[in-house]
Image (cartoon, rainbow, N blue to C red):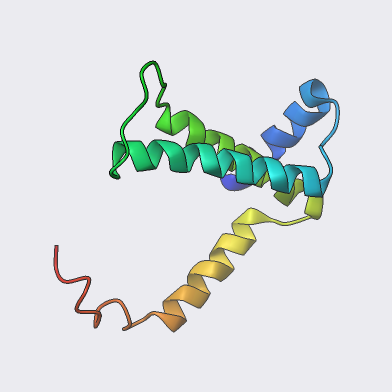
Length: 109
């Protein structure tokens, strides 16, 4: 799915099912909550923490929840995520053209 199509689909869902967008501040708080849930799974799966008995670990689901709320924020603030990611990649390419290649900490995998 293209990012623009995702933004349109989320907007349709909000209009048909969600009634309306939460305000921007509420959605920012919800985004932080979802990122925290993702971080909890990452810390347990890839870090030193362990899962609690009965704890569920839906990594893909948590990533999708983060993306959903981020798309909501983009929609309600008028951000075209396709344009934004292209600009971000261009900026990173210019800034980091040699930086990562010359970083001895990264090494060759």
